[in-house]
Length: 116
Image 1: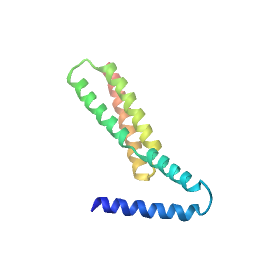
Image 2: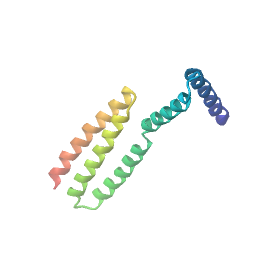
Image 3: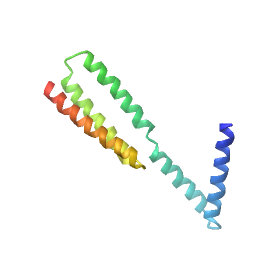
Image 4: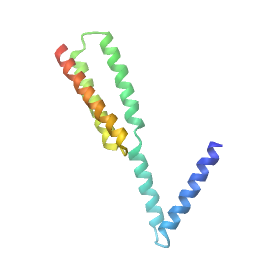
């Protein structure tokens, strides 16, 4: 059933693109390419996967002190992922989560720097 729904969505999308493109040569292909680029940009799965990996690394570092400098570096990596997440955000709730995440990361970074 899910595959049927996906195919129905694809068919509808293709029809709508054809309607929008009309008779303009190459426009339909260009619209598909732009849609694919937007979909790729909006995908935050990679950032979430990296954040999960960073969390695992942080847990391992905390379990085996001393880890001050390594944790400080890891906080920089967390911040990079949070910044990318915010820049890719297309919704207000995701942006709010990203901003809250950045605030927490900054608090952790200050604490980590005190541990050094």
